[in-house]
Amino acid sequence: MNIFKRTKTTNQRRVKAPPVFIPWRFNLICGCVILALGLLIGRAAYIQVLEPGKLIQEGDLRSLRVKALPSARGIISDRNGEQLAVSVPVQAVWADPVQIYKHGGMVEQARWHALADVLGLDRQKLVKRIEKNQKRRFIYLARQVSPAMAAYVSKLKLAGVGLKDESRRFYPAGEVSAHLIGMTGIDSHGLEGVERTYDGWLTGEPGRKTVRKDRYGRVVENISLKQREPGKPLELSIDQRLQAMAYRAVKQAVVDYRATSASVVMVDVRTGEVLAMVNAPSYNPNNRDSLQSFRMRNRVITDAMEPGSTIKPFVVLTALENGVADENTIIDTGNGIMQVGGSRVRDVSKVGKANLARILQKSSNIGVSKLSLAMPVEALLGMYSSVGMGDPSGINLIGESQGFFPDRRRWSDFERATLAFGYGISVTPIQLVRAYATLGALGVSRPLSILKTDDVIPGRQVVSVENTRKLLKMLEMVTGKEGSAKRAAVPGYRVGAKTGTAKVAAAGGYSDEYIAMTAGLAPISNPRIAMVVVVNEPQGDQYYGGAIAAPIFADVMGSALQILNVPPDAGSGEKLNVVHNRGTSNADT
Image (cartoon, rainbow, N blue to C red; front, side):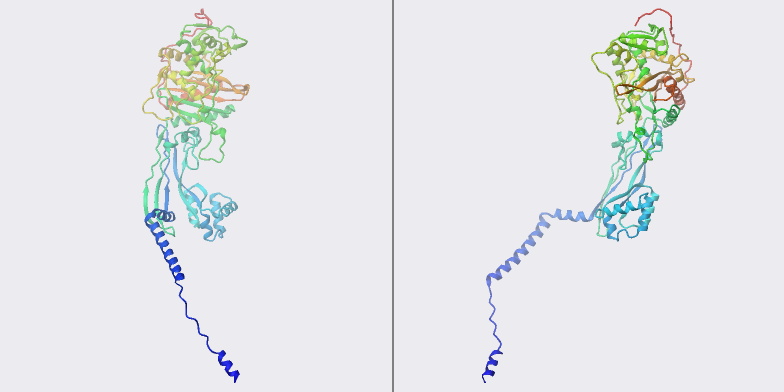
């Protein structure tokens, strides 16, 4: 009986306690919910009302794309409109490694190897380069590829590989005008020559196209378009016909005389325009695989040299201008040796007593030394400076050297003597041709120009017309049968020229190598062309300017006069009286 009673009591269901409502806990939870909701509403209001631009900017960063529209570089042409530098459309091949690996990586080895082959790349290096830059979004695989190569790349249909429009500079004249025109880099900016000097003028303004794309890269909206502005064309003063003819001559001279280099620069004396500027050896700007620095140097403007005897006409002109001598003055050069201080001045050939025309004709060192010693050194240096030596030529090409123009308080007699036949100073070929152009312009010095000029740049009269005419007649005698520059004569034309030979300067003195030069004008009756020829370090027994540079001068000058249709003037002038080994000295200088 007790057992049943105990079991009944145990099986009875326990009654639960009624729920207890806790107000503070309920209020806390409601407060947190309301606070969170308020923060969300406040943040949304802040983003939408107070700072909407940032949200728009973030969206634009993910959807707006700006595509550059490359602009063509300006064309460079010669004075007759012949193109010397043009831009041709090409394409660049690029890769997006992230997209490549997103679409399976480089599993299709055959197509990747085909890509490497057409671009001229090593297969393994191409694969390793992409593997090394897996996290990058843009790398160039090749630049400036031809349209045919670009079409082949497009047909490969490799994910993550695309094409980009760009341009490449092409130079139709090749090595003929390479030193003058220069070249551009991979990004179409000038590196050398005219390309670099006038880079701002030639470079156009690229266009910009702004579009909106969706997540799949499709254009859904065109936002804006800025039209591209092509580069401005540049018309040079050079005549490509003269340029090509002069280059052939200097290239052949380097071979014939086994010279280190040869240069020719030609100027129109009426306007100061450079008609030709060439150097050999040269380089091909269209093929940059084998560029060498010594081939790329424009020696006409960069290489300074002692002018040697080519400077003697300006000593005679200074003497005429300062009244030290006139065309009838007789100078006694003795037996060809003159003691000056502790040194000697020598003549190659004995001249004896001679007037200024004979002194210049036979290139007497003693004769011009006596003229130099008879006048203040400032007068001679002033003449050199006034005709353009020691100053920039005016062509404004980057890299032009100003040479060396001495400025000292004291001069020894020997220094003053050697200054008269081209030692102690150094000039560039472009400065020397400017000086001779001043003679051709009858004493008017004007800056040279590499650009074609419609209006003649006004010059400055630095020497009297009368004395300049006298000197031109003397220069004509130098190319006569008895002159030191007889091999510079041009049949049918009256030519005035002066040869020069100088030793190559070396550390502590001079080397055993020589520079052969010839500078002159034609035609003397009405000067049109001034020209300088320089042959650097010719090999062999012949190294004088009269034997090496003068024949080149004659060939190039004769061809240039015919190309420019300059009428012959032989026999149109009066013969100049040349006094030699007779008479008395009017001024024993």
